[in-house]
Length: 258
Image (cartoon, rainbow, N blue to C red; front, side):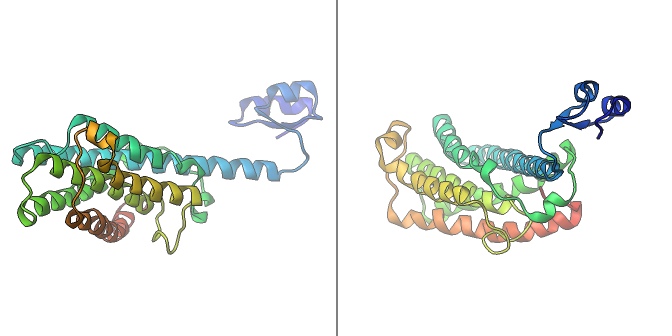
């Protein structure tokens, strides 16, 4: 920081040079940031917002990589054993579009206070570890759905099988988003922004109702009989319970979450 002629060299060489609007011209030209108010709380607010933005960005990246990796693994495994595709390409695209709309509300999300206490460094290794840890966990519950539909419900109709997994995947990913967004227990120790809650609830309802609409018919979905709705509700809840314990193991092993 500086406002005089002699402050120009350190302002130039520093990572972030800060001056004020009443400084000499050479100081202002050398600075990266010029404060228009005589209040250092502006810097504090800027750092806080920057860390919030970074935190919410990392939430999205880790969600996207882990969920997508898990879904790819699930599709590969199911395609080997099932006599039909567990989901068609167009169904996968629509499903991904719906829960991506939910994740687009993450820029508005709250960030846990302790996350803001120190700066974070972007790490591809951290993203890889998260993807390889949480991705297979979501695949495990996908496989539970496949096995339940095949052996318990004896479902052999491809369209209905695909429809159930379509709706389940949307509900599971949107509910799982609340597990991933915080290192704490969601809904109890850490609450998301109301916009995130609203989008999750709305899009989960849309994911269940799409098979009953003309859009669902266009992409090969069929109305879901009532008895199959239990899978769409119960399995995502079980996933969240297990994921909370898995989160504790991950944090203990790697010393971080987001």
